[in-house]
Image 1 (cartoon, rainbow, N blue to C red):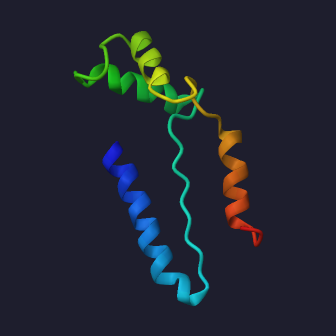
Image 2 (image 1 turned 90 degrees about the vertical axis):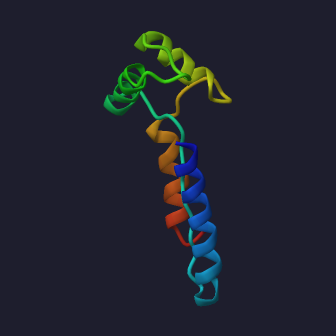
Length: 93
C-alpha cells in the first residue's frame, strides 16, 4: 500500500517536471480510507482474512485499527475528495 502511494506521488512529480515546459499541469489525489460503502467494508474483510502481522483477524477490530491508523481517526468521505479533484480540473488550479 505504502509503495503504491509513493509510486503515484513520484510519477506525478516526474510527469509534472517533464510536462511543465509545455504548460501542462500534472496532479494526483491520493486519499486514504474512504467510507462508508462497499469498498470500505471490502477492505476490512480482506485485511481480516490476510493473516497480516499488522491487522487482527476480527473485522470489527480491523475497522478500529484502520481508523486509528489515520491522523484524524476517521475515514474520509467521497464529498471530501470531490472538491479538490474539481479544483485541480479547473483553470483556477
